[in-house]
Length: 255
Image (cartoon, rainbow, N blue to C red; front, top):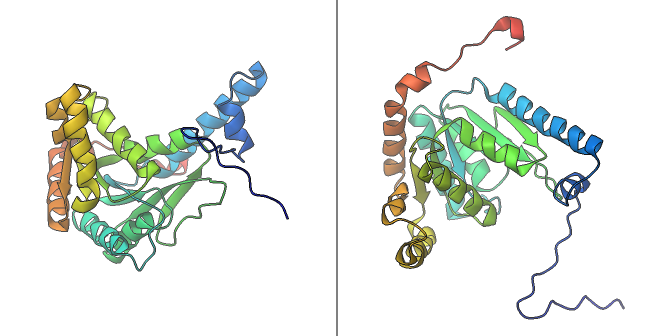
């Protein structure tokens, strides 16, 4: 009988070994000049592929949330309703393209007659695109995927999720806080889930000065799909000039 490995000692992280040789090589220090240059070209190729696929998808709202909630979970039903409301407001629904809340939001948008797209990611246990996508791209690199999830959106709706969702939430908040993107709405849906996080921001980060008191107002907390739809409609109205100025298709370029 093979004994299981001993758990790490107190305070030590659990070792996690990446099965993806490309990402492991990319993030493990310098390589040969030729391999580094080839990797830059592969990364550029992923950006070009994403830009080409999503260039004409219309004004988007990106919905973040966990891949782990099954269809029977109340958060899945909430994500589905949020997808419907985004579509009703006239927005294309963009998600990470996977299962769980991502699927729910794409499904709700499709059911409401809206357009539904996904920015999917290759994972060790392959994350297949959900069946409610009108268009999707699967990326190798997380940072490319995150750029695409932000680039086309005029609002961000964040449903309950884990490390990945928290990463996306604070990425969006940092971009707004630092003025790298417009002050688009960041809407946290699920009061009981997100209130402890906001309490931590208020009572710890704001108190010690690592976050400015006004930065807490970058995040809107609600349980109401009506509030979500209203904020999205307002954001789209505020940026009508940008939306009208979006490029048109050129048939000679195969668009």
